[in-house]
Image (cartoon, rainbow, N blue to C red; front, side):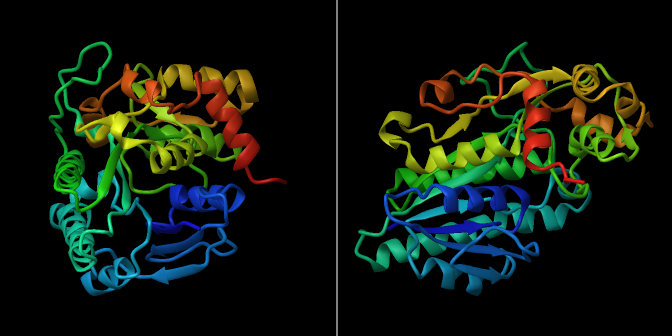
Length: 324
């Protein structure tokens, strides 16, 4: 039996992961899963325990780590747009709290005489990269973020790598593509419109498009994200080596290609609900994000995602579109 802690377990990706673990445990026997977050959706994913709290509450995080979970998925953060507009909150939640979390793991490692060494999977982001970009970012490209969110994620990657090098834990940072199509309501992420221009029209609602249709970006579905996390928990990290951050597979496409995929699947009436409304602030943030990747290390290690945006839309329709 494997003891699992999902920090950020009430969010969309955390809930997807918890559902996936309930359907297929990491171990042969049933996992024990604890979810920790500010709150949880009604009728959400099954879990052995749901603990409400904030990652900035050091004592509460310490009490969770004191139970010595075998696998810890750290998904909690505030999103890109909010981190950019609220500098103090971004660094407090996305970086300082992560340091405290790692220190709690180290304390348990020391108290155990060195026997406690959990697998820690951290959800980083392609925002750790900044322009200028090559046509495709390969596994050797420099991490040089140009947003506060990207800087916070990059700092966490470095901390996790160093704690792993010292043997306090066995960590891996996975740089998620933009997750699309996200179910539910819009959030404050600058990338939220990538999902909104698909999700809202499919639900019969207007969607605002704040950028040009020639904007290109890197995407994967929520189902792919859950698969990434599961694979990261099981992978032999000896094969990963000392570079404990991975670029993950995804789909590179323009906004226009997204819209045309939606047109192919749902028709012109649905596409007509997309309304261009330029937003210079969002356009500036998005212009500093990467557009395409060659994630050869991750593919060689067995990570996989959709191969085209049509499949991403079909995944949303099959798994998350509310049934009438």
